[in-house]
Length: 113
Image 1: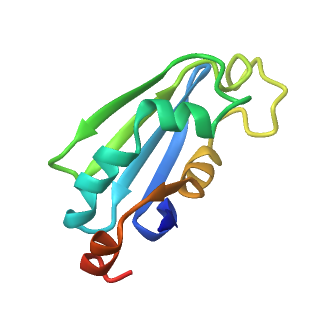
Image 2 (image 1 turned 90 degrees about the horizontal axis):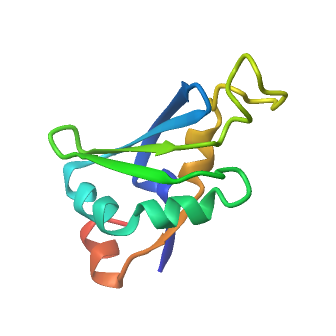
């Protein structure tokens, strides 16, 4: 089954120059391994196709049950240079939560979905 990340996690985002910084935090400890498996740098790059022109780096934070992504070359040059509506990347977290991942029936049942 396909499920949006918003049912499994919450997120925060911001900027560092021309790089969007997006944190994805599992709502429950048992969700974290699923996020690690399914939410790869490549999948995030594909999800932000047309917005993220550079590479996507992923950092795992297991003690927090979180993943952190740096989306390079995503903000039109950064807050002081960009003409983008969201030059600080504040909406990137909401956009990531709309990404769909595949989970099998056993995982869905185990998570109560």
